[in-house]
Amino acid sequence: MKASIMLIYSAATIVLLHQYVVVATPGSFTDKISDVGRLGFKAGTGIIKKVPDLIPTPENLYSISKQTLIGLPFELVLSGIDKLCSIALSANNSTESFKQPKNEEINYVLLTENENVSIPVTDSILLWAHEKFDPSKKVVVMITGWNSDIASENTAADELWKAYKSRGDTNFILIDTARYVDTLYAWSAFNTQELGKAVGLGLAELIKYVPLENIHVMGHSLGAHIAGSAGKTFQQETDKLLPRITAFDPAKPCFGEGESLQGVGRGDAEFVDVIHSDAGGLGKPEAIGDADFFPNGIVPLMPGCFTIFCSHSRAWEYYAETVYKGNENNFIARKCGSLHSFEINACIRQEVPMGYSCPTTTKGNFFLKTKSKFPFGKSNSE
Image 1 (spheres, rainbow, N blue to C red):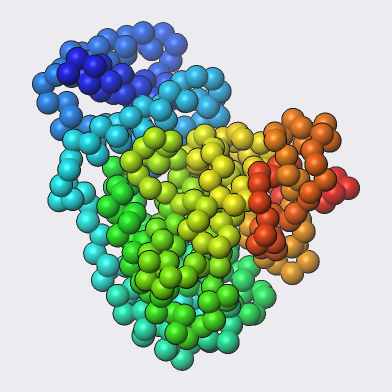
Image 2 (image 1 turned 30 degrees about the horizontal axis):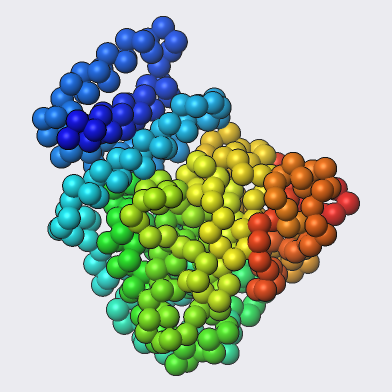
């Protein structure tokens, strides 16, 4: 019991330190520590019930500046968040405590030139049979995450749709899950699995209308983990694997190593490629796919970014750039053990394009450098 209390106290301490590191001046920081101590004193008197309230919202995390990222405090913050998630999940064995998703409120949105067609995921057959859906074209299913929902401006959905529209050969379908990922506590195994199950069942219906090899599922942040869950469900329902899942900076908080939440990974599709753009920040730093790409190394900030929110979005921005014709080879990556080895030309000479044209036979960890402004890709001569 004592050890459990100390764990709760330590995790809560880290989260409170996060709040103060962002806003406190050097002179006031010491005073704030006493508040942390008072919280620790109450650790044995029902603090577990307060754990979900201690977990920061996405908006809190997005506000963290570059200055906060430098050094130990930020690493402690995310470590504390993972601990809080573990405590919260362990203390709540009933699914009633989670924010249960309602599948009838989650829609497939087929984006078209003139209008968007919205169909509940529970009625996916209506979408595949819709006159705006062209079964002769490829199908991309994009699952949103934090700040990549339909209502946001300049989102992953908008930019990726523009890119695929330019090719003229793709049905682009969006699945908006934003209402269920507004807090880190909502990132439960229950939510991820249930949302993914709904998508996976719909995809199992889709292969009655579209060749399996034409389907590509992708997701950003939490959406990447939902995509992984969809892949697992699809396999259970059909005894087949989706051809490809692309994960844009899969979410790290509450999905860390040793956590009980099951995220996207190799085996969820024939080919799982992962672009890590905020590794160790909001994104997972571990290699979890068949091919893992680490632009600029295993770091939380990309060139040109001063917040982890900016870096968290770079993954899909890099990918979107490669969808446009002529840009397929903008990001040439090399199989390597580290960015340092890449920089001193000490890697094996296996090079592949990151993004749209990545060969589905690619295996291993790949490194590359990017620019700080659009276009982000660097050619081999740069």
